[in-house]
Length: 246
Ligand code: HPA
Image (cartoon, rainbow, N blue to C red; front, side, top):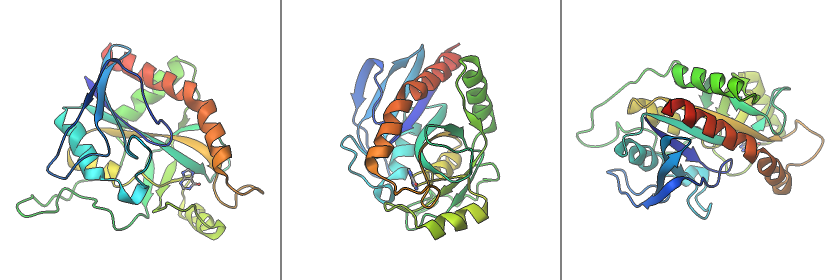
């Protein structure tokens, strides 16, 4: 079992055993950065940061196709994506870890499909359940086993960014049924489905979404929540790896 991990704002880097950097190219261009390969808790892991090594690639400029294809080329059996998100519904408080079960894609203008070139087969993949049920169940099971709170189920609204939302945009997302809002959940999930790779996302709520608190959203606040949550996020990933390796 090889596990693909996609980090970003929620997980800027990952230290693996026998770590190696792998420069790869794909038919869809160059991924955001070299892949980091190695072992974690007995499992083989391939990690990529979607924003690049210097966190310089904004959500709408990420080459999602190259990133997903690069992981596919390494033969990953599953992909777990980490996403920093804003909390919309009441229980999505800063610091919460959440396992979305649905998404709504509001992003636009991103290269979002592998069915997109001369000679590429046209696919209409089923996306009724955008996240892999088996992988979600496994994550919930290991979270319980290591006594980590992981909220089961949320609708992830994926917006364009990089700016944050207006209060009215968040109200609209809420009316649509979104529980959390982030900028990088799509087209990643759809591309993984096109390649048949089981994919799940772990959301880390780093702020109340715009208008959901009486304060403005600051990067300092987000950074502090993120830092405090790292041990829990890493523990969850390690528990998943141990389970996959068993
Ligand atoms: N909105 C969109 N994306 C985000 C947010 C947010 O409030 N917080 C972290 N990523």
